[in-house]
Length: 223
Image (cartoon, rainbow, N blue to C red; front, side, top):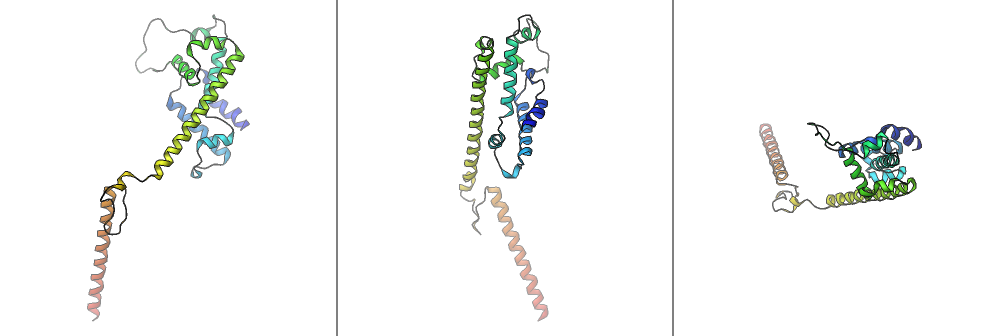
């Protein structure tokens, strides 16, 4: 895991401090992260181990938490820069005129920073004040990221439990009248499945009757 974090994660998130990712980008990054952890831990998909347990075994967090930590650390570094520095001017300002071109990126970096601070419970109107002190900013980010990671784990566990509960419950269509076969009593999941099953009974009876007719004819010739 030390080599993975030092090489793979660092290469994957190179220059991520200036990214403005969408939710589809986060899902793709986290999917790659999980595949790498499965390879390291020798876990296969048919083992059916949840992603929360895989990250717990590896002693790591989801990739979104790692990405947020790096971006928040860089944001605090930018806030502590002098006002005449270019990164500080770009991070805390916006264009006075002009409009966004057609088919351009809809999400701004400032919008992403606001969303990241909201996920960690950091008020947007105080992040410059909190970022002025390095130790205080680090402590605030650590608390916010720990809360975000715990919420992420709770949502994943609740989703897994809800999926297992839905899987164990009978399908609503199985409770309808007429979903059970009148010949063998088999319960079908839908009306279409019941029709297909009844067609199978008809084919079976036709094959059996044809076989009996051929047997009768053969016995008649022998007589």
